[in-house]
Length: 254
Ligand code: NAD
Image 1 (cartoon, rainbow, N blue to C red):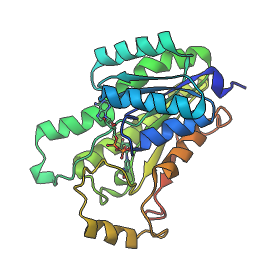
Image 2: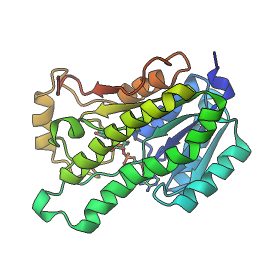
Image 3: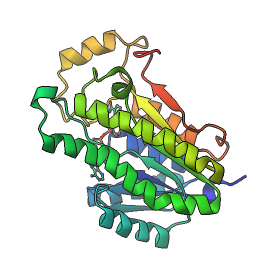
């Protein structure tokens, strides 16, 4: 069986200090993976890498990259491949949301939400999948959302819900294609997680109402999500592919 310490895990969007990506980078490093952080924000990416390397004694690099730009993805991957062990894990975590109601969504906004969430995941996955298949080991994990399953209702509107649902189809179809090469492809669907993605735009009263409706009576934490991603990323988790794990405190049981 492959060992985590022989591989690098890429986490996109792990710059955000209170974000799911940052917690995921820590969880993967705790399991022994070396870490590459790709984020729009160069300083944040570098800071995340230093923090993870210091905390877990793994190698880590933080690289500025816009995941929607194929040239930027190529340049970032060249840096990853020169600096770190081969890529064994990809967590497509970089994402943006918007609460806009359907009749107010412009074509530009629709494209922006799809660009980061869907095209970004496609571009990075396309770049790393051949190497994983060649080496016969890979774990690809997508950040979908409960919004994809129940049609919005947390913060994101139609564009976000549609983009996160697109990731489920992408993930499942890719799982079929890459399975024979030893590469698993899975998704997580978090509910309300306490991060900065809503940029202070989630009304506290609405948030309290939402928490009332969650059987576990709290918003999720980033470690609630990171722990499940780390589980899916383990070398030993090789018989789970094409699945979606809900992490929503019971708010959507189906
Ligand atoms: P966050 O806003 O804290 O972090 C997102 C990160 O992505 C930021 O560091 C940002 O710089 C980076 N990013 C944005 N656009 C990028 C681009 N084009 N290229 C590279 N990096 C880019 O968000 P979060 O709450 O930690 O969310 C992480 C993921 O989890 C997202 O995909 C989000 O949709 C998903 N998710 C979040 C929740 C929630 O409640 N927080 C629920 C379900 C799903």
